[in-house]
Length: 87
Image (cartoon, rainbow, N blue to C red; front, side, top):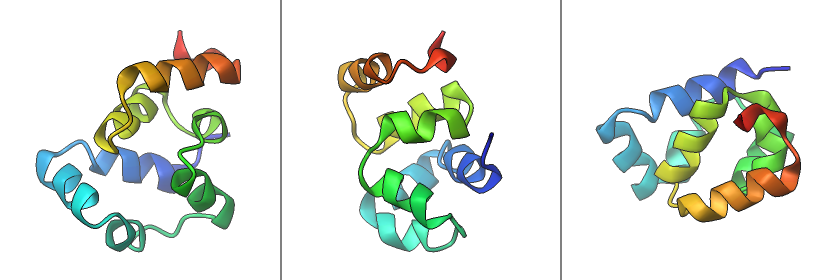
């Protein structure tokens, strides 16, 4: 099941200004989104497998690139999760 608030966060981070603000003050940006505790914990833990079923695959990939995770690490994690959303 998709999580609207998480999707909105990831969508909003697509602008360069929002992405820069996130990298500079992650907690302040996250505080503006009423995320479920388990979703916030998955973000804090860079838990690709837990977040993958909750958002569009393109938003998920973009988010982890914005957050600073190298693409190869993201791809390894998504493959290890067995998630079928990554095409």
